[in-house]
Amino acid sequence: MAQVFHRSLNSISRFGIVGGAILAAGVALGLAAAYRSSLVTQVNISRAQPVPFSHKHHVNGLGLDCRYCHTSVESSPFAGIPPTQICMNCHSQIWSDSPMLEPVRKSFRTGEPLHWTRINDVPDFVYFNHSIHVHKGIGCETCHGRVDRMPLTWKANPLYMKWCLACHRAPEEYVRPREEVFTMGWKPAEDQDLLGARLVKEYHIQKLTHCSVCHR
Image (cartoon, rainbow, N blue to C red; front, side):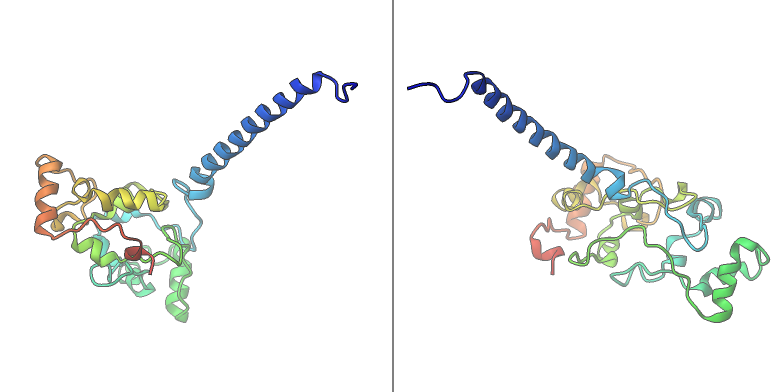
């Protein structure tokens, strides 16, 4: 029986199979890299706000405590967006005529809240409680980064499930004394392993990794 296909098609078929597998692997690696890139995670990217609020100036320069603006962080699931009144406590006296702060003054005059762009956010199917983490000794900078160095606020961590689970699986590596939760740049005075082990026991921290902890 005469050969139907030319023998060269064997090589072409092998090349096509190998090339297709390499192409598929390359596409998969590219998508994985894109998923972790700042283009998707928004990590280290400043976002426009109605007023260019500087944490660096207010926290590092003026020494404001996180709780002065984020009033509900110790008692509520949400840290709280500061109302205009909190801004005006100072800015009715300081920089009261600054053009940059006109949106704040307008908000105060009209009662219309400022519409801030949220930087650190999790999907609607994820439950996160600020007060629990504060109570258990997890510092603000653990999740939000060194906001005292941010002229404009950016996202410091991707907040992916894998990232959250790293802390839930080994809380002793991240926990700090409760009185240092709001301290930027805090460093343990003793070995973190020893301190963490002690605080995990003292604060009754459990290694919660069950799906229902965050997905409710």
